[in-house]
Structure formats: C-alpha cells, structure tokens
Length: 461
Ligand code: UDP
Image (cartoon, rainbow, N blue to C red; front, side, top):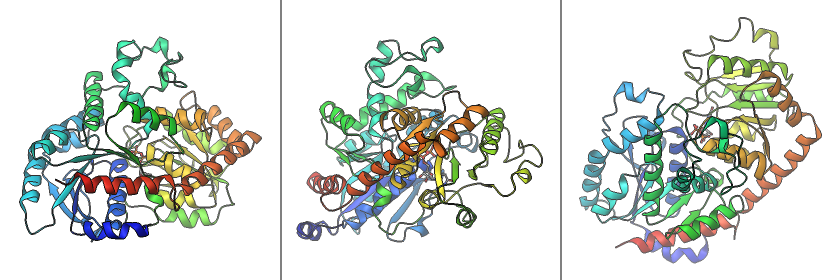
C-alpha cells in the first residue's frame, strides 16, 4: 500500500501520534478501528480514547494505546432504545472527561507529539474542545455521502415543509433531492424531533468546522454527492473506503461474540442459495414484524442464515415469539444465531442475497462482496441507503410494505429465481469490481489516502 515516493515522508512521520475517538456503537466502532489500522500502517502511532459505555477490548489491538474515560452514562440510559437521547447525553457528559484526558495526553512529553484528533462526526462537542486546546480536528463520518447530503439539507427541508414528515405526504417526491420521496428522508420515529434536528445540526456544522472529513466510501460509488459536498464545504473531503478491504491484518472490534457455526453451516449449502438476514446492532422489530419475517423466510423455500440479536424483538429475550416447532419443520434449511462474523458470511460462496436494514457498513460490505440486497431500512440514514441501493445503483430490491410475508416471499423469488435477479447480480458484481479497483495502485481511495496523510502532516503546528 505504501508508495515508494512516500518513504521520505514516512521517515519524517515516525514519532507522530493520532488520537482517535469513536462513538460507542458497533457501526461506528468498526470503521474507526479499521481507520486506525490503516493510519498505523502509514507510520502514525495510535491512541484511542473510548467511553466506559460499550467499552473496547485493548488486548485485540496490541499496537494501539487505549484510554477509557468515565462517561457517566447510567445503566437505564445505556439500555434505552432512544439513540437520539443517548447521543445527546454522550455529547454533554463526555465533555469534561474527554477534555481532561486530552490535556493529559497533550502535556505528556514522554509520548510522541499529537498531530490531530480524529473524532466521530457525531461526537460534535469535540470541535470546541479541540479549538480550545489549539489541536486540529479531523472528522470520520461513518455513514455514506448520499445521506450526509440530505442531513446538510435539513434546514431547507424544514423551511419547505418536508420535515417534520406528514403521513399524507409520504409518497411525494422531494424535488430538491431526487430520487428521494418524503418517506425516504432520514428521520427516526418516536423520538423528540427537536433533539434529533439538534444532533444532526451538531454533526453537520461541526464537521464543516473541522480540518477535514474522512469517509468510508469511494468516489466511483458516490461521485455526484462528493461533487456537491466539495462545492458546499470549505474543508477537504477524503473518501478512502472501503476500509475493510485494505487487506491489513485487522483484529475484531465486535462488541458481541461472532458465532462461527454460521460458516460450517454455510459450507454445507449450495452456491448462491442462502439468504443472509441481519438487521445490525440497533434496529428493533415488533413481535408482529418478527413473525412476518419468519414466515416470509420459511415460505421462500430458500435456505437462510438469520441473525436474531438478543433484544431485536421488542419485549422478548430471543426466539420466544416463534411458533413451537417452527425450526423443526424447516429440516435444517434455517440456521439462527445471535451474532455473525458478517464479513466472512458475506464473502462465503453459498450466500446469494443479504436481507439488510441498510446500515452503511452492511451496505458497503455487501457491495464489496457482490451480494445483492433485500432492503428493509428502519430509521435515519438507512432509508437513504436503501433508496440508493434499489433505485440509484439498482443492486437490490426494497420491501415497500414493511414486513408482509407475501411481499417478502415474492421479493426473495424476484431476487433469487427470476431474470430480474440476474440483472441485479450483474450490476452488483460490476460495482464490486469498482470497489476493488479504487484500492489498487493509482486507485481513487489510495490517492485520497495519500492526500489525507499529507494533509494531516501539514496540520501540525
Ligand atoms: N455485524 C457483525 N455481525 C452481525 C451483524 C453485524 O459483525 O451479526 C457488523 C457488520 O459487519 C457491520 C456492523 O456490525 O460492520 C453493523 O454496522 P451497520 O452500519 O451495518 O449497522 P448498525 O449496527 O450501525 O445499525
């Protein structure tokens, strides 16, 4: 990965430290730790500051230095389903402990000097802390560029009456952001809208105020959104993804144990026959939705590997809502686990489709393995990602009526059996190639990574 012309710079860089601060959710931790591994390979020393809440395991990353900060998040707050309230709390309660830790790190002369802070975009409070310490701050946005463009447009969408969403307008197009309809706007049901607008504004504005924004995406995937942002934002933008495809030895940053039995089960299935279903680390389903999904999968006649995370179904511990004997009737056609080694699963030749909630990591991981998607977004940027998958890149099908067992069955058949599915598979395999090329010599993401490294180098005071 290291270009020869870099060698001189690399020498100078030795002895420089970066401090990274991930937001403590799985979909934010994974890309931040991968970014740390990429930048470490470029010669930087890495310090990770993390919260006690969803604390990281330093023994998985012996090359990095870890510091945990007391975030003051109560058990009841941590287990709440209200991610907006939790994000707001993290941005208030972490201010003092984070600042104290940064002051200690900056004054520690036994360590290498710190070039900059790299913070998750949703830890927007860190811009003010970095400014007060005269430390440059670069942001990692762990979602896609397409949804970020929509977040940037929130003030306009509110002014023009698209937000807050009215049920009567769901099917109307958002003329300013084609091909989105009102129902695709990245909102969250059942949270306080003002709090949500506040954290989105914090994320957008403090990203704009930062010294640069890093994206786990690649130019060939989101070029027009990149052009839009480069026009609207004064600071440099670095799409250097897909992070997990740099082929550096990277440890797992999974908060849950990944059940390896999924791989031995997949080994016994026919090529491209299995539907892998997983809805990420935060999404929740009602019992009724869960049952429709179970019957849709069962009636599809395809084998399926399903991640049912403990707590996925509201009011249940795990699989209690399934009718008794449900799995027995499927004669080994189903394998249900609590958490999967998702990257290995998607790369397995037996997997033919990914039924996903379209979290950005899952979406990108599916594209990188050329696995077509069935899209069932739950909230926020997932809605925009699902629309791009189904209507812009045309590499998946979106379930339009929530979770209705007949629609599910029909959708699986369209993707796995019918000609439409073949065309979708062709398109995603071309996109997979593009994802591969951008990390080859001269590829866009490697060039952007070189620019990022030079940029960080110039930031030093
Ligand atoms: N993941 C995993 N095992 C699972 C489900 C998910 O390792 O059973 C990983 C997945 O590979 C991805 C992350 O968890 O990197 C989920 O991030 P995403 O943005 O897709 O969704 P979120 O959890 O943030 O909603």
